[in-house]
Length: 118
Image (cartoon, rainbow, N blue to C red; front, top):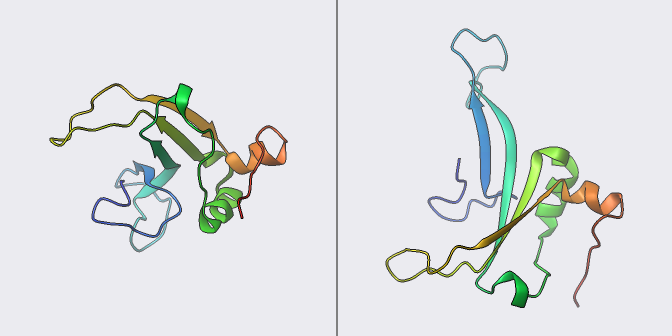
């Protein structure tokens, strides 16, 4: 589910991958979303600059970081470099994509640093 299809949703992720449950499943409860199970959350960080010329830093909001702590392994950040689109919507080049699963866990295990800017 693309969360921002109709405008900024305010959610700390861009895409929610869900698996539909069968009609006879007794999992879940009443209400909206009870017939689906969340598989993963995806946050996309895009840049027009190619990876070899790009600054490696990107912003993460407070809400995104708080969500990363709760989501754990179900959160992926996709970093897209070289995302240039012509006026009609076609890609000018194939972008380069990197993926990081569980950004909070990677930071906690000292695999990825956090930078702050004042």
